[in-house]
Length: 413
Image (cartoon, rainbow, N blue to C red):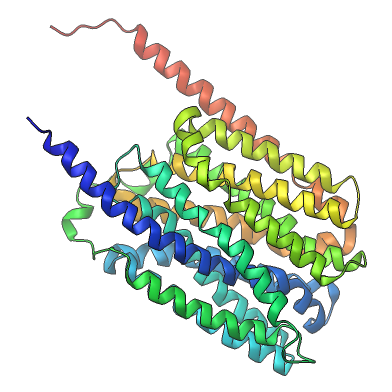
């Protein structure tokens, strides 16, 4: 007799695989938009801001948009379906490009900050792609679905910085203005791709029986997942945000910073081709721990010198570390909730991660301008150590509970 449950699982995984291909393509296009902001944001900020210490504020506004968009993204997806949130996000991406170009043409620092904030809202929606890929998939396939969607970012690493390189001088003397117009066009292409994702509007029955959010987020495993995500992403962002401006301050050309950022983004997403398999083999906590350790290793390289290869190596190693830590933490989140609870739990997790990222982002410009590139790198070490300690305590506690349960004699009849 054929197991009907197994057949249903195969059907669901086939649907998930189809969605993964589309979401990976959308990840590449959306990531290219983000790459334009990170490659140019601090440089444009230095040109438009009244003070150099405010140069990274546009990127900080992007991060604020990330944090501000997470909970609304979950609420919209819960009520109207994920596709509705995808369309709204891509629309924000298109406006990012249009307003960014206008801000450069008119020399408006404030308008440029509005543009990058909208880019953050777009980025917040794109963070849900990895969770959308796992919708309806079997437990065995979920980590791979998350990982493969993240792998789409490899193409963002190639497309985004090259887009900047090809277009930054088109409208002289307005550096990067045409880059933002092209960014708007890329967002519209992403909108078309996202429209084809199979994400039906949820039914009221889909949310029946879910636990209160407070009960879910008090689980030690969720706390560890959210905390590690809230360390891995902000620390990577701190270095990535500061690096282009630091390279310019060290007299290195924009082409060098574009090259470094390109390989940083490739390093962020290329491991996703096998991160899911590593999680399946070794468990998410070990992969997260490896990622955090690599972030610390990247910061150590940053302390060794200020030549272009030092910057490139720092960005590359921290990118790989971010992938292991963030994808692993995302897989941990999927273990903490039931299907009926997914939207609120996933949105809350991202709110925690990007809320912490936003708080730290505003200090990055001050940190670089007032204390230098070395201090930026040294800031990475304490949070990483905290994350490793939390993972160790959570793992020890889990083993202790399992051992206690195994020691209880079986009283069944």
